[in-house]
Amino acid sequence: MVTVMPREKICYKTVHPEDIKAAIRRKFGTILKFEKHYALPSTGVSDLLREKSHNPKTISAVEAILADRHASINLENSTNLTENHGLNEKAA
Image (cartoon, rainbow, N blue to C red; front, side, top):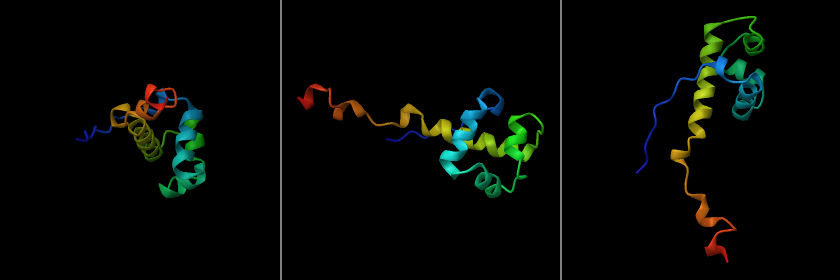
């Protein structure tokens, strides 16, 4: 049985800017592609991370990526990898 966890809202201010950029790059490849996908200003993410702008659309897009990132690393949805581990007794 798979348990679907509700998407948790994560405030971008609680995440290090480099972690935000890494999450965006993992999903979109570049910050520019992310900004184009969400029709954001070309410096929207950069301005948000440097606190030069607080565009609600940019904030919403960034927080959506952070929520996806958080959900994707939720260990409740992971399989038990110890069964196949090379140091496991079964591997001997």
